[in-house]
Amino acid sequence: MVTRPVPAAWLSLRRGADHAAREASLPLVDELVGTLVRRDRARTEGTVPRPDETVEVRVVDVGAGTGSNLMWLADRLAPLPQHWILVDHDAELIGTTDLVAPPSISRLTRRIATVAELPDIVTGGAGPVVITCAALLDLLSPDDAAVLVDVIVQTGSAALLSLSVTGEVSIDPPHPADAPISAAFDAHQRRDDLLGPDAIDHVGALLRDRGHRVRVMQTPWRLDAADQSALLARYLADRGAVAVEQDPALTDLVAVWGAARQEQIRRGNLVVRVGHADILSLPPNG
Image: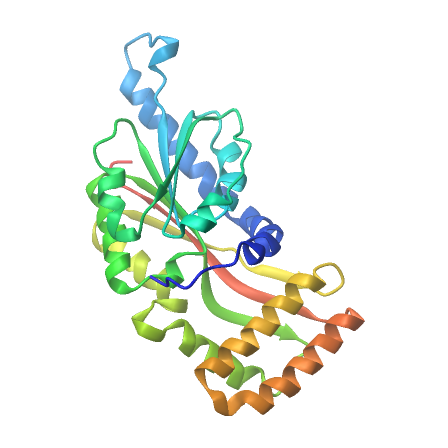
């Protein structure tokens, strides 16, 4: 997994686009909630459960950052009572999380840990488990992904794995430098054996091979310079910088491209679509 710091300011800047994109995945959330409710009904069938017998769902948020995933998802998992466990390897980043937990969250725990430590975090507790993440899968190595899938499968957990990049980026109007910059950017995403834009296919195949039922929905960013100029400027500047880091021969080309793009943002006539996708994984008996 990538261990370079992720700035809290970047997570804050992208939050609105993330949350808007995830509206496309509401059918996956509805299916997840329905599955958890059916499990609970099956558990209590033929009995009259007391109020204090309500099962608490443990939601393990991997790579939780500053809590954006919780802020979008927790209310949508209601009326299920939830114990959220926020997991991140960056102590400083997770320490910035200042959340007012919605009523559906009965407990909130923070854990400084890596993907390799997930088995110890997830196993051993009582009640159903949902493993979730946002904007994480593309930052994992195949070994990290194998650990994540093992935990999901071995604990019989449901999983909602959101906002992984797919490598699909369209910029309107187009520019001749778009293609070489995209190629360098995608190569950088796959550096050091990271999954990058292959993450959705890779993780989905691992889960299917282990018998889980998998659904994938597209959750793209749709960014318009007219009302998202700050995010667009930062996204495109970072995209150019990453391309140059991967291939320094692109330095001059990226400078010309970047200046043109920033001018289009200033004029308000630039639209960018950035591909992301969400995975819902349910156990075979879910």
